[in-house]
Length: 284
Ligand SMILES: Nc1ncnc2c1ncn2[C@@H]1O[C@H](COP(=O)(O)OP(=O)(O)OP(=O)(O)O)[C@@H](O)[C@H]1O
Ligand SMILES: [Mg+2]
Image 1: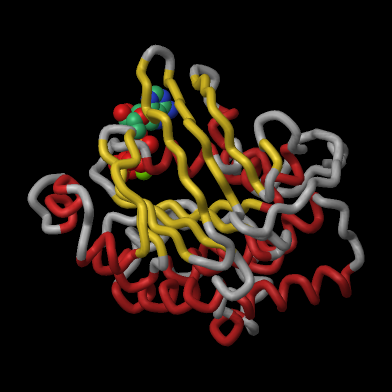
Image 2: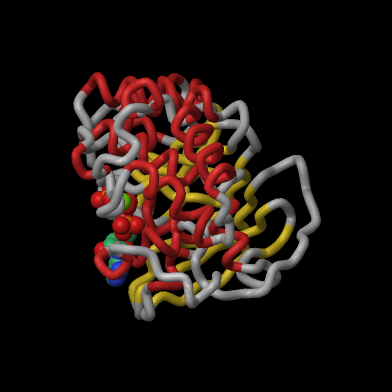
């Protein structure tokens, strides 16, 4: 990041969000490419102080698929998601051990964090546009990454907003405040903001939980489109949603990955009784 580059409204923006767009300082580096799995975690343990929130999580994430993380509140879904682009680095009491590989490279040992957060973007539960125009929200990441030419930025903004299935609704409002959009539009704008930095993996933490059914359906359709180009990992409490959109589903309980498999197997023929109980609404 060019540290002398300060954007309007930056002070009032959520640090987690700006970090998630890859805005800390490190040196760029090329990484080898393992094509079989996009992300692999091996025996990942994470602690908040003395409290262990993740226990020996070993998971393989396939490229160009939607993987859903499900499980009761407090079971570690968000914590796990944040380990995948090192957003937990922001929490001082966090310690972890084990490995997380992205394209075959251990992101906690050999990966450049700025590049990592560019490649692995995050969409949060609550739509969180920056207090600036629709255009500037989407141009924010590319600008921070050094793109200054107006024409190039215009192209990136249009491509990203189109990719986020929002263009028809905002093409004549690009210079209006983003906070004037509806909640569902704001969430697609946040997806466009992530797409603008050309990610490879998109992490989504309950992206539709604050949205009405129509906006939710739009985001679900969008996720289905996006998986052709991106790998998507989504946390959801909505079992119907997980069943509709995920190719693979992972069930967490008390920080343990109880079961992972093809969504239809997890939903129709789970191997573990606890998965069945959760899916059938018997607890959580
Ligand atoms: N910043 C933090 N500091 C200390 N403990 C935390 C922190 N964030 C989460 N935890 C603890 O880690 C555990 C897992 O929390 P996490 O937020 O990952 O769960 P979750 O599955 O995402 O829950 P929900 O479905 O409610 O969002 C919980 O016991 C929680 O209290
Ligand atoms: Mg959570």
